[in-house]
Every structure is written in structure tokens, then in C-alpha cells.
Image (cartoon, rainbow, N blue to C red; front, side, top):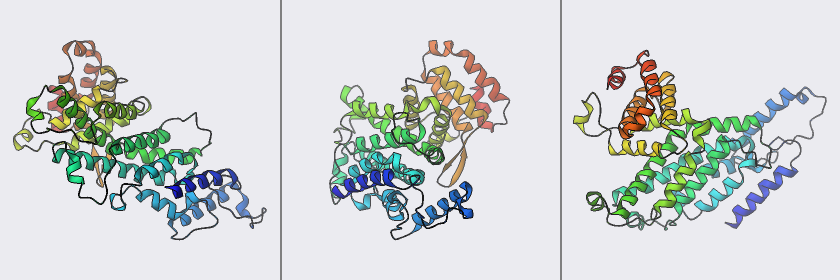
Length: 376
């Protein structure tokens, strides 16, 4: 833990004392009148040496810590379960506080870190579902205990990483290279479906815990008789999920809605008799996605229908498990379930955007399920 604090201090110190631009290569012995002194040549040389440094197995003296292969590799693997959970909060704190100083390494570090955070959250939810809310029982056999606030630590880390890369951080006192931020932004956007999937899983836990506390649904609480120590504070968990998603709905609403389509497609009904229905009945996991989207206060019904239209007209290809999936049909399936879930008055007030969605979608070359959904 103390070594990580020292590492963070060294990263900040290097940023301020490193000659020239942060993250640039130190090559003072190069003559200034050489061809490499041109801006383009120097940029090319810096990029080449950076790539060599992050692939190197040993310390490279001409590169800062953030460009060292050892650091990048350690950061990308820091939250893997096989290395233990005790240091996870400290690694999250280190990397979140070092974000403005990562330079070219920002996207390289952030993308696998986000993926691992989501996997760890998914695993906790999976254990929660398997053990009926008593996730501690199945984790006792592990080498060490997981802190009760571990899910919140990961959620706060995800929020910090994602918002730093996607949202304009005007409060930052450190100037970041726009190219580095752009590369990191693209890397984070590719991870949006996985992050939304994890948020939907956590939202399912929130709804289940709230149902238990109210005691209104005895058929569900019969199975979940005990509250998990990791998800005991459903109110705080709900707040953290919304704090993560809500700021993204403005600038990245369409990308977020396309991610909804990707997650919707992955939550397929397992029952065979539902596959043959022209208008499929949404499963419980899919209805959780609908409820999550409805809970985002910044998204009105009109706004949601407009974004659905944009995604259907220009369907995004979401890369999941090395496969590209079009999300136009899943998006229409989501809109069908969403429309069924809102009050009749809200539907009447938003007939104009709904009719626009139907009119423009009919003109598209959709697969047969899409036309049946429009007729439904």
C-alpha cells in the first residue's frame, strides 16, 4: 500500500519535472539541426519509442513510469482475482488519481481496467443469484475475505475512469493531450455495452433488495431470505448506478441506447416456447433493463424514442465476444417493451415521436421480426 502511494507521488513528480512534454522521450544527445527535429518526425519517433517501452520487460530509462511496460502490465492486471482482493481498493485509488498523468498510456490502461472491474462486479452478482442473496457463504472458501464495500469501490472507480475519459473535465489542473484523450474516449465507448450490462445486473439486485425490504412480493423473498453483505445498502447502490449513467445520457445518449440494444440481445429468453412468438415476451432480465432506462431522470419518453429512432436508422455494430452484432431489431424489441411499461397518458403525450419512429422505421430494410414489431 505504501509502495503504491510512493508510485503515485513519483508519477506526479515525473510529470512536472520531465523535460519537454510529459510522456515524451528523453534524447538530449540528438542534435537539434537533425531531420528528427521537425515536429512530425519527433512525434513519429516519440510514438515508436513509446510502443517499444510499453512492450519492454525491463525498465526503460528514457521513458516515464506511465510509459513503462511493467507499470502498464501491472495496472491492467491489478484487479484480477488470482492476485487477491486486498489491494484492489488501493490500486483503484492509485489509477484514478493518476488519470491526468497517464498520457499516451491512458487508453491502454483504462480499457482492460474497466473490463476487469465489470467482470468482478458480474461475479459478485452471479454469486448473489446463486446463493440466494448470501454471497458471503460461497466466498468464504477463498484465500481472503472481500470488503463489504467492494462493489461500491468498483462502482466509484468505474465512474471516475469513465467520466474522466468521456466528459469534459474543466476542473482538472493538468492539461491533457487531445489525441490521448480521444484514443481513450474511443476505447471507453467500446466498453459501454459491458458497463451497461454490469449496471443492469446491479439494478436487478437493487430491485430485489428493495422488494425484500418492502416484503411485498413473498414469492420472490421466499428464495432470497437473507440480505447479502455486499448489497445490503440498496439505496446507496441505486444512487451510485444512477450517478454513473445519468451524466452520460446527454453527450453519449445514442451510444448508450445502442449499448442497451446490445445488452438486450444478450439477455435472450431461455424458454423455447417464447422463441416462436412473433411479438416476444420480455424476460425478467430484459424488463430490468427497461426499468433502469426509465429511472434515468434526464431521459424523457420523447428523448428515448428519438434515440431509438437514431439507432434503428443507423444501427451500431457492437463488438461483443469478438463478434459484431447489429442492434436495430433488439432496439425495436426494447422500445416495444418500454412502450408497454409506460402509462397511457404518457403514451398519448408522446404520440408524435412514436409515429415518427414507426414511419421512418417502416422505410428501412429491416429483418422480418422488425416489421412485425412495428405492426405490434
